[in-house]
Image 1 (spheres, rainbow, N blue to C red):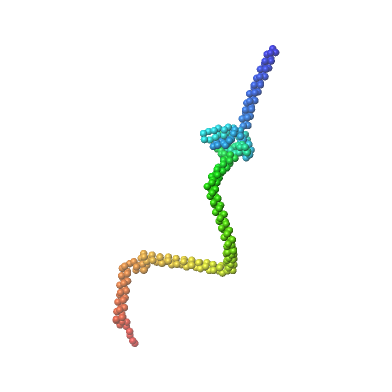
Image 2: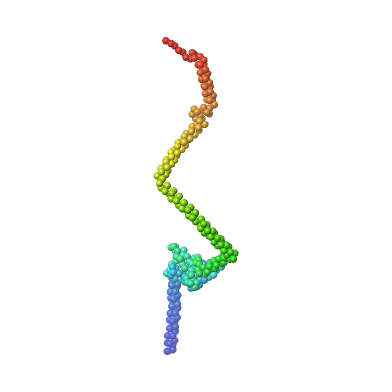
Length: 290
């Protein structure tokens, strides 16, 4: 009897322990799921030494960590887990940056302005910010270029150039020593001429202003005369057009041959009448005396 009771107690204890164990696992799983946040996938061309569990930061605050790194054919997929409570706009940017002198890396998130937020499983594209390794490579390239520039041939050219510059400097110094007084006198003369010109302009400013005003008035008058000539030219052109088109008496005289011949006949008759009056004045003039 005692053995059966003991077995029952042990069995019940084991049962409740197992139930509690499974309930605890289930509860912890639910709690962990509710606290783990969400996954975002970032596509990089190169991750430059990024590792799993490296931090994910935004404005200097850690908001998650690198969960998984997967190498594809032409790119690298980096899965990051964003902690619960941090919401990133869909147009956010990501980059890999150095966070220490020893090459430690972090994924830095730059939030965008979209009103929609990244969800679990969304994909964005990232870039790599140049770090100390890139600077070292740049310095190596610069050193290589400097070595190419400063080779033996170029050194000789630089040496010759410096020698020519030194000789030119010496020649200029000699020229200044020999002709220093003349050059100083020429500069002094230029300064005096400039001062004299400035003084003359100051003294004759009123006269110059008067001349400029007269030139302005003359220019205005010339503009008026030019306008009048333009009007006269326009009028003459209109008259010429009318004559050419046969309008008016002059136009008909110029363009109508019949009228021209009639005018010639009238003129001839007038000439004949004048000759007859000269020959026989009594025929046309009667004088009576009382």
